[in-house]
Image: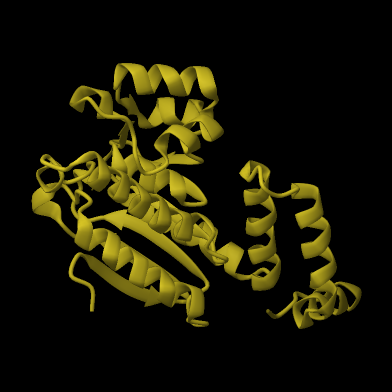
Length: 255
């Protein structure tokens, strides 16, 4: 179904593997097209309640963009490529279902940007993060200049952007770029265990949490207003009625 992705659904968790191991899973036009189409399905398929994104093999999550694809681009083509990356990564960031990056190796350039567009990140001990675009006379074009600042703060983000330095998993954890660092064999089990817990909660409430939290970084909206609106909307949800009833009956809710 997808040329560059492997997909598997188990217990309402969709595992997505970027599958270009010969290119260290580098992003190209087809990967963007496949991710775009995949998340159309994630948004609408009720059997999917959460998503894990990882990379094929043990060396790389996504080692960057496929440079051969854009080396002769005009400025207009470069802008179009950046806009395409923004479109797909915004679709991931705004997905109403939790999306976790399971980073199993290099997450560089566009790979780091893909990981940052997910709701949070878990890294294996061999993971490496970086935005090396200045080595190519470029800057990150898929949201990296924005999300890296949001996640780790302006000063450290600018240092990494300016130096093109790679950081290891432990430093990424220290900077709060990732939530957990685990052994490679524990990477997917850790992601699955967290998502199984999340999947036991109200899907509607989770979706509203995502919308409200994302509003923090959207200058066009008032995040408190979004919170008020989404909080109120929950009161018409059958899931709210089930959650409150279960609490009063001293039992676990069934969502």
